[in-house]
Image (cartoon, rainbow, N blue to C red; front, top):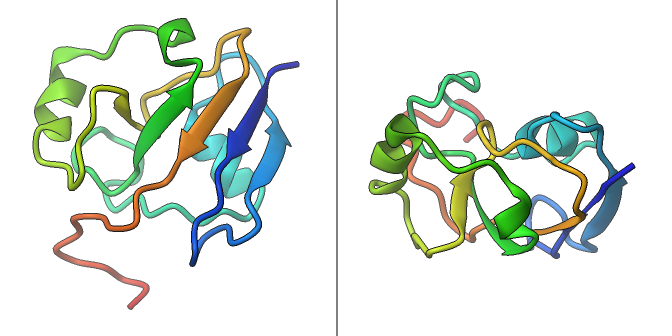
Length: 112
């Protein structure tokens, strides 16, 4: 079973976490299932950038992003070459190391 290591994030995951993932499960679903409350304002429909993550290790093991995801990512805060939307990045057989950016662009944040 692949693992996802979430690097420490001051608010969402201060200690970081190493989590088991199922093949084909999204990075966002793994996080949410384990209490890491990454924002997902569009309810995982690839229509915003609130679940933007940076894949620090294992990026090449992910399926290539689609044009819609690429268009959304262009609007993300702190975009990097290894950026993905957590709702679209599906776990394969390789372990991943994920960084959750410090900020997110969310015009309507329900939790604040």
